[in-house]
Length: 216
Ligand code: GRF
Image (cartoon, rainbow, N blue to C red; front, side, top):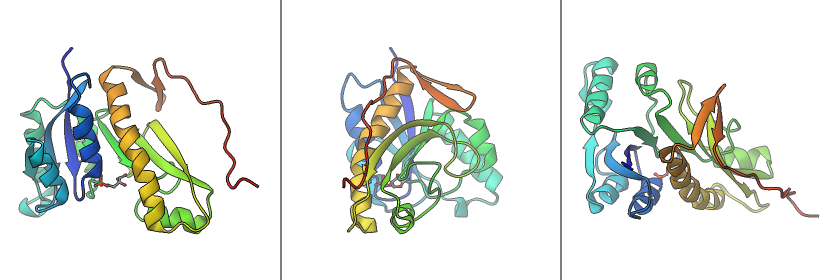
């Protein structure tokens, strides 16, 4: 079966990109990265892509006269690679409504909180400040509003008493690197269906354990 062709959007470190590169290196994985687009030059993620022999583009809105011409350039670049799915992986620019609509149900994102809680930025510190006992990460289809859209997978981690933004970020990141390749695999296998803005996953079972944090 033909592999799902991915375009990964990045803006920085690219550790999620790396997890996708490693998943795709397995012959049996049903997706491949066709290209990586960054809105910034000189970032670590671009180095990771180049080291894996993946075509990269830096497309910066500042180089365009209008948001519309920027959108057209992005859509054209992606089209020429026959991309099936766009994967946002730490992409720090808001996509235009036009772009999101053009790729409806074909853009996914990874976010370091249990959405719909803590959309936006600084979410690990905000989770600590809010005193929540659990946080985690979410892979979801992308809709017009930032960090919204049908949820595909979530992983939960405990928030510890002495956590700071760094320690919680690290704990969540380990799970991000598990669930992003897994979610994309499910999509590539045709196991996800969106019905009434909820994602159904063919053949999925659910955990029967309950967690309480803290344990007292
Ligand atoms: C990750 O925490 C991701 O969930 C968020 O941005 C961060 C990107 O990290 N959207 P990296 O560039 O993949 O290392």
